[in-house]
Amino acid sequence: MRLPAGGRPTAALWTAEREALWRETGLRPTVAVWDVHHVARFLEAVQDDPLFPLWWLIALRGLRRGEVAALRGEDLDISGQCLHVREQIVLVDGVYHAGPPKSMAGVRLLALDAFTTDLLNRYWAQRGTPTGNPCRPLFTHPDGRPVRPDWLTHRFAELVEQLDLPPIRFHDLRHGAASLAGTANVPLKVIQHDLGHSSSVTTSDTYWTVLMELARAGAAATARLILSHAKIRMNLLAASQA
Picture 1 (cartoon, helix red, strand yellow):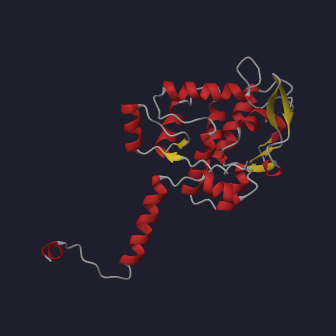
Picture 2 (cartoon, rainbow, N blue to C red):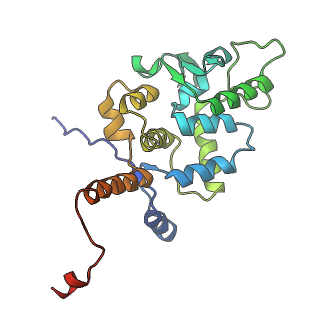
Picture 3 (cartoon, helix red, strand yellow):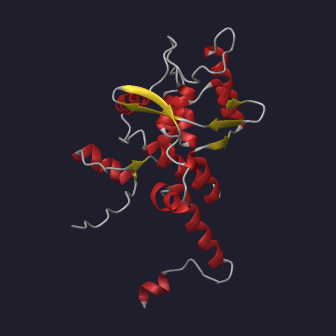
């Protein structure tokens, strides 16, 4: 028996209408992404959280949870403003193991902006051991325990609920990061590289959701193009009488 292949999950954007429906009925999309103001609200609310640099990094750069848990101090290049993604943490038979990323494309050099670089540098300086052991995990709990992938999933869900934000999964932050980058006019090839995808088709068809800011910018640009060539008057009186 040959079963038809399932369709790729398409993330639904949390619009004001969809959010109102969820608050009234509890209905929610299986896969969803926050709009820009949701992401901003989340990051503003968690900026005093001990792991704020982690939440910031995931929201903007879209690392997989296993990848961020596997990061070590040596993976952070302050002078080069980049992050080396080399491994991921996986749970096998109740034991955590460090292994290669999901695909060869997952091994990547992730460029960082100045703010993120400074944020991670300050965090590492505060959490690093007196000897500055570069092999230590980059992200740890205040008591020094390494952050684990399953804990990230549960903790993120707790924060979303506490902040009364429209629910999304931790993995949906990867969809959101791709969508934010697209809204910021980052080229598709760059977004594909940053997410560690082997194909740009996955990036564009599955992970990139058109946020309202980009949709409005596109609508405005199209209207400007036509209005620059056509003499249209803002007068609907004649049309209404026709």
